[in-house]
Image (cartoon, rainbow, N blue to C red; front, top):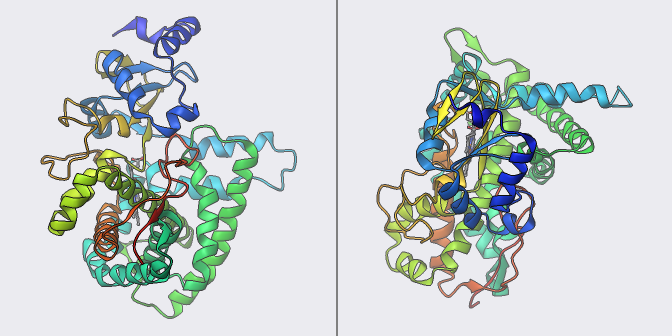
Length: 422
Ligand code: HEM
């Protein structure tokens, strides 16, 4: 065991961070994290970060090994939310709803509870359900593009990527049109849950949003109990696995999770992907002439600029990663974005190449928490991108000043203005 790594002193940690001269919360890192990832991966692929002493892992092979390891568990976020109750002046405004709901979010759960719940959700959310959505997704994309056609310009994020992902997950769950925008606003507040640094006020805002989401969903679930429809909420009510059924609290948590997880990530993937294609004219031209390359192209854009850049795990036992030993109880930050640009796995990783073969990226993670919505996200991105470039073939970027959302975990543009011939 590498004792030196474990007993790194505060000064050494600061020296180490200075040597890399990087700060995860620097706006420059936010705008373009990839040069930093490369430096980290080359100099110290398993690096001890000076804030909090987390381990940062950037090599593809190491990230993949940790994701598949039985020696790690998920982040303790729900527990730490519960513990924050003690800092609240007004005990009535506690964080209990948020703490409970997130404790039933699959990506914060561990076996055996995770295994049981995932089997039940997986049953309701099968590939057949996703495949059936294709015509509906096409219809939504066509409607959205029709709305902007006369203008000759649009914001890809606000006019296509975001409303598409909200509509699709809403239709899948069975959420009526008039409630979709409100749910989108609530889950937007809740999406801060993924970030490592969250203030008490933000937790309170998330707790309030969760209460409001659930108040709305409770009525909808009651309606579906009486009168089942062809939607995921009805499927979740009916889902049964070895005499196990989902409780109402579980259904509420799962719907909240699916709405949140299915919306922002997919929206950001479409935005990031269209930007990447517009910045690589030879690739977008190829896709226009050969639209059947769309599956490969979507895999490549998901690898190239992943919507989720980092995941956290905690070591259950001492764990060897790269040449370092991570002690039981220590936190590990897995940089999916860095792993997906590792030259040892992806030749010329900074090139966008829609013909890339063997594209086994980790943008959807791996192991027991592999993204449940990967198939849906892929189909949405494929239809959105191919329809966009078919209908607006001379589409181009309308601004060079692009701003990224302020998060080190979620990677997505605030807006992506483009223009095209009316
Ligand atoms: C391109 C878009 C998407 C990306 C990049 C993405 C990424 C991820 C990642 C990295 C994880 C692993 C989390 C962890 O291990 O801690 C995950 C899990 C998950 N994703 Fe996605 N996701 C996307 C779209 C979706 C969609 C559309 C849905 C649902 C409709 C969804 C639902 C889930 C769920 C339920 C989990 C938890 C699975 C588990 O822990 O067993 N995701 N996703």
